[in-house]
Image 1 (cartoon, rainbow, N blue to C red):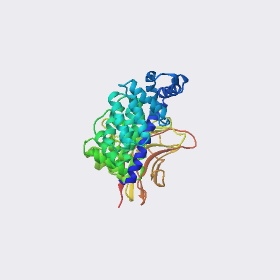
Image 2: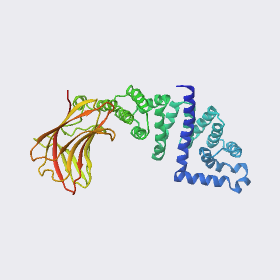
Image 3: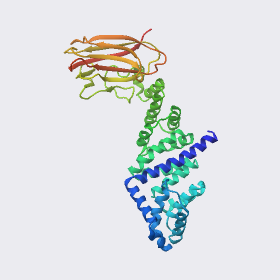
Amino acid sequence: MTGGARQGGRRSGTGRWAAVAATLLALPAGYLAVRTAVAELQSPAVAALPPSDYRPLLRPLLMLASDPRQRITGEMAELARDGAKRAPLAYEPFAIAAATARQQGQIDDAIRLLEEARRRQPNSVLVRLQLMAAYEKARRFPELLSEMDYTLRMSDEVRQVVLPELAKLIRDADGRAALAAVVSEDRAWRGDFFAAAARLDLRPEHTGDLLRRIQARRSDVGLERGLHMQALIAARDYSGAREQWLAMLPPAGRAASALLFDGGFRGHDAPPPFAWQLRDDEVGRSERVQPNGAPPYLDVHYFGGRTVPLAEQLLALPPGRYRLSVHGMSDGGVRVGSLIWHVSCAPGGATLGQLKLNELTPSYARHQMSFVVPVGCAGQDLRLIGEAGDVAATIDARFANLEVAREN
């Protein structure tokens, strides 16, 4: 990493945890406390107080010092110094002095002061957040994550604010190295961390590096693979994403799912997005059924009214010519509307082929179509679409033995 990149990391680190503190202080309890602190510190009575009475104001002064919107004035610093003399065991003066040092760019001094404040009051969230900001600015990521682990266990409210900012360390090489050492352990907030990371716009090279680092420490990396797969899909690397998805399946089922997942509708479980996504609402319903003594099938009920996908999954077929085939039946037939197996480039691209099934009979019959995946169409959406007719009408159907095979 270049020196310029490190400088950028320092700036973002300071703003990040300052923003976390500001968010916590903006919550109802924090906001009320800060406004009360402002009122107390601006009260005319304060000016008349003797120094021995300054100690009750140390706590509100710390809250002001923790708010990045407030600048530490000379009077505030003097008040903290006086409070330290009058209350030698207090922790607030050290945290307030640290905010002053950080404001002046003296990050090492700020860290030493905050570590003393933490020693005196280990359960102060504001002290620990300031210390996290200082550690990140100094690029001391292991210490930052040690602070973070304690802070995340303090309350759900803190966790919801801290985790999204913590996940942004994935974008930093040193941050990923430190994260891997901590996230690889089975901590209570591990799942929440990856849920927060999934909401970020992350680059595949960063998520892939995190995956490799954690994989060297533990065997169960499903959450890490899922995050990396999401980043690959966002970058339109569908084949790379499918490789990660296949690695999450049991080894015995990977070969059968190379092109299409569970075309036999046997109800196998797999993580999205390359698994079946089935509809169940007022417009239509589909489910995989495994009857005793009979082959499994996809049971479809389309109620009409508007055109919707009833079942879908994402594919990652290489360029070439393919054949889609399926066995279908319907006791009542298709009188109004249509059922269509549809293949298109993802996301929302050109149609590659569609198999319209308007002549389903009470017995299974095989239907098929050919389609071509062109170069540049790295991902494909396979959908069973219920197409609305002139009037709303129900279509009940069953499908079995869906296959996608390459044609020579």
